[in-house]
Image 1 (cartoon, rainbow, N blue to C red):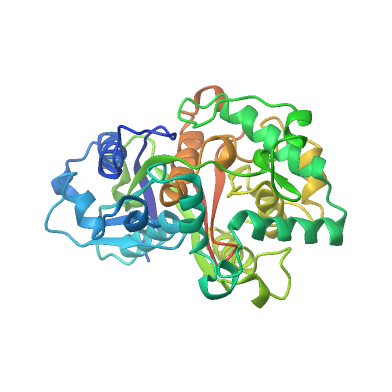
Image 2: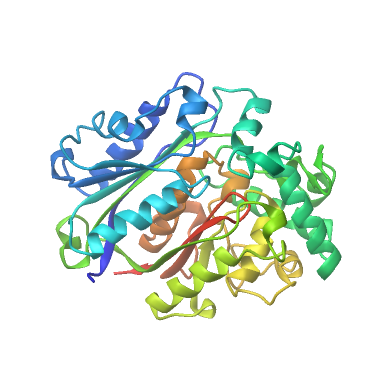
Length: 386
């Protein structure tokens, strides 16, 4: 198995763009990644598109060649991956597998979603289809209500408080305010975060990620060739994907995500590191409780202590392990098909020292955790300077 590096990365701004379509967003991100790697489209040997629900959001199927040909990438395998909010994380995993196996040398991953073409109610319906449509959705659940149940159980079992959830939102908004690509560059106070519009108790609007449009792209190459394309390659030290039951009622314990734990264990083993060595991370904070649980499942803090860990400042940019210096899904935005690839772009920026005002003091070893649904899919990636 060959060592693999990210040699190109590019993303659009995230936000609500009524004058942009899905393809134009994907092309912008892809062209940025090509320029970053000093590559021409004809040099790409395989193409993966991470997209959750383009058919429902914009009425377009057959999306992979729809995007790749618009980038000028023709006559190569062009494949769409759908894994809910982990779609482009999964696309990255499959692209890495091709390069690691020696099948192709230059593989591009683009993640994209155009969500704001639909009403908020319709977006919630489409997203809910990543849950159990025959049970949870039929009973009227949305992901906000599912993660509200997860939050309430975590509060019951471990004493987690609303202030703990709110502190995650405050931190991520502060980080996103420094990110020129973020959807919502708005600093909030703890009082604001505690008193937002109720969504699903105990979650309010500040506990929930944004409905966004956007795209992100990365290009992978064998590590041995990486410096042909960039002076600052970033090595994929470990990567793993795992899965679990889709419906909450099939899980033994809804306060932990086995897919996160398993993918993390495998990624750590491949990378030859443990959680204590990870200097910073981009975690999937679709809801504030998801970031808290992820810090526990990834081994950054003990089971049940994720709330106090966040509230104490450990995950702030100046803390012992900064989390979501980009602003996370909460502030940066969550165009679901783009999120996994965007996390990789953000980790790459930090490792390269290109994160601007968000640049962290310790940034040579980072992690990305991309979650799909209510924990049914997870991709964990460990990256380091090459």
